[in-house]
Length: 144
Length: 144
Length: 144
Length: 144
Image (cartoon, rainbow over all chains, first blue to last red; front, side, top):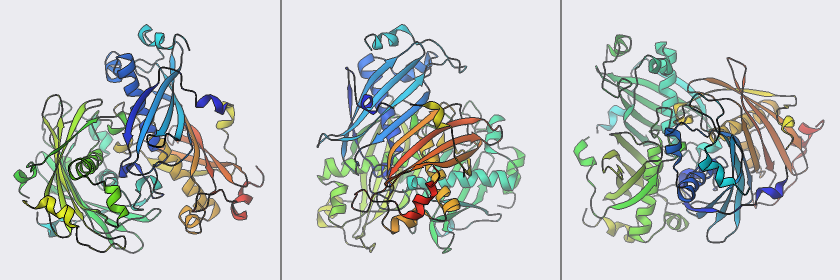
């Protein structure tokens, strides 16, 4: 894996603040490694809403489902209880039938990197078959 | 609330072992208070399977849904990472359209009480309307 | 339990918006019943920060821990994916060594009740022994 | 990323059954993508206990902490509520200061692949500094 590629976030980048809950942490006093998948989800949902004017809930109602086919996270430093994080999300690549988001989780105060990763999603219809992404989404990746 | 009633578990009592995961704990080093709702769910599911010969998944397929209408937990002592717990589950009461389970979470080694509580469930059909519990379930509460 | 008392939220009431994640839901298409404990936690944390000027993280650093001793939730209607909820939190009662928060989860758009409940917390020191709540907190409950 | 490498599980392979809870699923009716990180955790914990005779809790008590530095999952098919899964875990590689586990999540009944992935862990001491893995662990990877 070309690790350097991971941390690249292509414009536009969406930023979402997140306050760490007790329930996000584990006995090591830091955010549990699985919790980051929730943060990634929050990031891409608000990316679609704020930058694309579309809600993922709305896409599903129209019959477009985007299940995760791959997820990756690399952990750089710890995030602790009550810290304010920034979830940065960008679209990395769009093909006819898939979309990849990149993420960075930052400490909002310190500006330091906590974790980074990506998710890849297939475009499927309610029957579970691969389907073409609509033009409204594909154009988001026009220059990528 | 008559607190004394809570800890009563009417026979038959179902017992399910559970090993505490890192992901169940929080920064206090103990099981997060919300995690117990998952343990209660595991307890009542296996109660139905082992003592009643019915899977909750199967009930849903037949059109009977049992959403939680009330949940309560009282925390007595802490459960820590990697400890082996015992989830004790019993049916407390069955009416025509509802069922209540009582739970105790115990330290398997020490035999001491960690937490106890209850959940109440309504019987509804897929349209969300109250429906009568089938006789096969109602007889479970015959003597209660 | 006098159920009517539950829904009373004494002033001041804190309001926190919350957007439902996919990860909060379950296969019934609604927010999992255990997820509400996270929402309650978010509510009381921001209540302390916004209305009392104290962070729970800061209290812990000063040696005051407030573990949950009781939690209760009554579920009224379903909350679905991507819906915007409002977490309403109020202090119900403060004694020398305990504090109780009441909560209501509302649909922000419809203004309808989703769930309501409470948590009770003991005041303990890092050794786990009951300790007196500081005056700064006790005065929050002066008229309750 | 050489995708073919992922699915290889070097002997010995540890097998752990897991029953899907309601709380593991999301509104799509399948196991939430973040839940798999919990399953991976359960897998590697029991691998250490059953095949190496060491509990991760015990390692921590001795001052060896193994935080996750990378996590990856590729999702092949859906796992549904109440299905019985098999968590297969193997050690892929051990260096002086790191360890990598590979995982496969299988449908126990059908024998089909649900998901596969890996986690990489650094060996650190309680101060957070890289430390050498003890010989008892390093020998597990002698032939890898």
